[in-house]
Image (tube, rainbow, N blue to C red; front, top):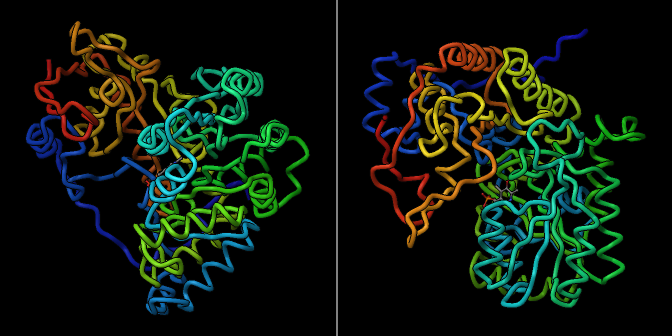
Amino acid sequence: MKTIIEPFKIKMIEPIKLTTREEREAILRRAHFNVFQIPAEEVIIDLLTDSGTSAMSAEQWAGMIRGDESYAGARSWFRFENVLRELTGMAHILPTHQGRASERILFELVGGPGKVIPSNNHFDTTRANIEHSGAKAVDLVIDEGKHARSRHPFKGNMDLAKLERLIGEVGAERIPVCMMTVTNNSGGGQPASLENLRAVRDVCRRHRIPFFLDACRFAENAFLIKQREQGQSHRSARDIAREMFDLADGATISAKKDGLVNIGGVLLMRDDALAQRANNLLILTEGFVTYGGLAGRDLEAMAQGFVEVLDEHYLEYRIRSISYLGEHLLAAGVQIVEPPGGHAIYIDAAAFCPHIPIEQFPGQALVCGLYRHAGIRAVEIGSVMFGAVDPDTGESAHPAMELVRLAVPRRVYTQSHIDYVIEAIVELFKERERLRGLRIIEAPPALRHFTARFAEI
Ligand SMILES: *Cc1c(COP(=O)(O)O)cnc(C)c1O
């Protein structure tokens, strides 16, 4: 059989409220053309993020009922620890309430002024936590990773020459840890290869620099290795994932992605002394070491999620549904970041609306157009999110690309939902000259994309 089906059936449904175009026009205006301000109920297909939006399985919900809420040494904790130990082989497993809590603990311990922390691309919370500690975050992704049209299979790889150069410039003693984000979220959800992970680990080992993974999407990365890397197709995703963890000295994970849960995180490490200090901080700010700011039922759901995510049928469906969306958009002439990665499709909004100058936010115009046309909520990753106005000159700075991200929640939407999204985007593309630019009428100084108010030009 050629057709890849969703390898699950629906037991419980959540109705979608279908709005009219007129209703959406009014909602969009009330939200001042900012989709973060639209109530989720008024959204037909919500592609704002894949984080914490997964549908849980019957087994996960059963685990929620079984959850042991004892303060110390709960049964749910031991199940969680066993699953994570088998998956990663790490000696120390610390539960946290989400990914950034793991990051805050790690960088409070190893960061600080004068330190430099390289990665392929740091995710924004990772960068923020590194900078909050006083350290500097450096991105060393390969050049292909910065070009939307490059079809390199592993655009999440790190540039080894740049890593060696950085170590030569600042000295290994100032680099407390080297990270790799798998898949590379800020770089379009692109995977890193095993070959590259091994090579980065070798450089780190030679310079005695600990090597950590930001492993939020470890299963999607493992499956893309199986599909794309020479000599890996016969291996199971579980086996590949284990090799990825075996290369590392530790990892931070947000379980809201490949953990298939709505909340949760993990901090992993091998070093006993570092783990001792991390446990002390965990107790201080998250909770006791056997629950880390979570309920026992959350640990159960996470344990089961980390098992289910490595099901090969699930991963095949997951990766295929992303590439299906991407290929249909490409076939209609819509430019995207290629090749499709693990969790999202990124539309090149500047190419989509060439009549809208960068100063008038083509990405935001496309996001508003998608909501108005079909009730689809996407997110702008361009000049609204990353652009800045120089307070002295009043001039605007713009990021390299104006993108709109369509992030696909796990196990939530069916193929007909994705077909609806494709149809909407292709229709909008055909009448794209009707999309209008926007101007900001009100914005806070930081993280303006959440609350900025816009007006159409
Ligand atoms: C989501 C994410 C994080 C942060 O996790 P939260 O659970 O949102 O705190 C860190 N790194 C990457 C790559 C992510 O995608």
